[in-house]
Length: 453
Image (cartoon, rainbow, N blue to C red; front, side, top):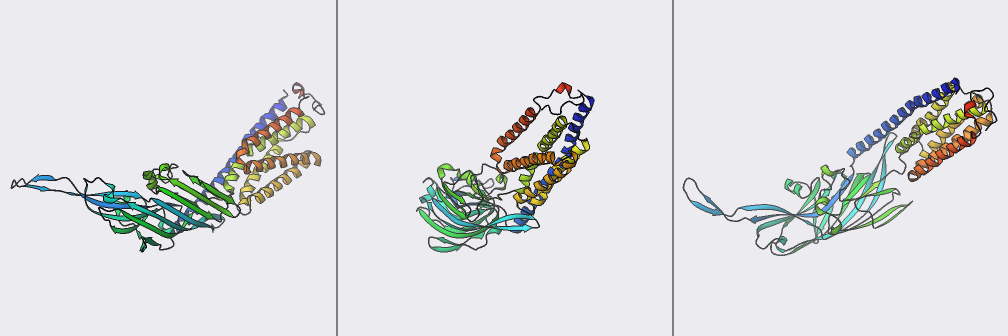
């Protein structure tokens, strides 16, 4: 192989590696902007309310029982006394049935160019508890007394914007902030408490309850289905929900006007212990939490899409340099390595323009402006490098196709492998067909290559 040709190949390879540096810098810049977006979300959540997880309501029953007789001998007098100590225990009862209905509206909060989404929930709870006689314990247990407390767990009580009137068997009561540390054993995390008073020991009790709840949170809502029979119905004007958690909706509708979803979860499908721990900070990021969830997601995450786009930057550069090199072989018009470098930098500049413009415009508009600017710049430059408009326009058509395929990949992540594979296959096919009659052993000879394709 001719030495000049070998040196050209080596220089092209070196330039390709060199151009990875600006691509890495742009990718790092995108990550930095994305982290700043997350910081703004956390800042807004600290000022308003964070992601919310609702647990309950559940019934915590504190009861005391008399223990077995204990005999004690006084070491000084030798007197023997018998007593029965009193032990205190906690019993947790889920609701027999729980019906939650609500509507969510979504509000955008901005800090500069960054945004977060707050949801405002208007909920209504209704259900009942059934406490069996003698608390369902063995008749051999001698009960002294029992006290019932209604508990409602939520991640961030600052998001409660009303003082809900709780109807218990027709009587109006009100929640109070968590006061009894012992109830942390029943419902870990932050909660609201409502003291229901003493329970009859030998008779069954029933508590029918209902209450409204206005709740604000940031971007994510989770509900732990703690009852034996749970029915949850939610509607919203947000058209881009992401249903998450261990339980998906039995029925759902999503369109441009918003969404409606309905869940039905029985006690056979969930673990009560795991459900009650849904608000425990130790399990906050555990994907196995027994919850149903909704994320009021942004349909276009510009930072995620820009980061995905820049990963294809190396492919753009390789295909462009391959086309330049092929043009050199077939047209016998040399392209200087500096010209390779300048075109490669223009390709890298597209990704920087994309992330900068997408923070101020829609992603599609930012993509079109960035692509048009870079294609126009490269075509104008190549018209002089290649000595005419026709080859420059041919390259411009190729770049237009590349950017079109890339946008399709970004919009359809499920088909990204298929589209990328087809692009590489087409590029390889074009190179093979263009060079099918080229004698690679005679590339160094003067006059060889032109018109042999």
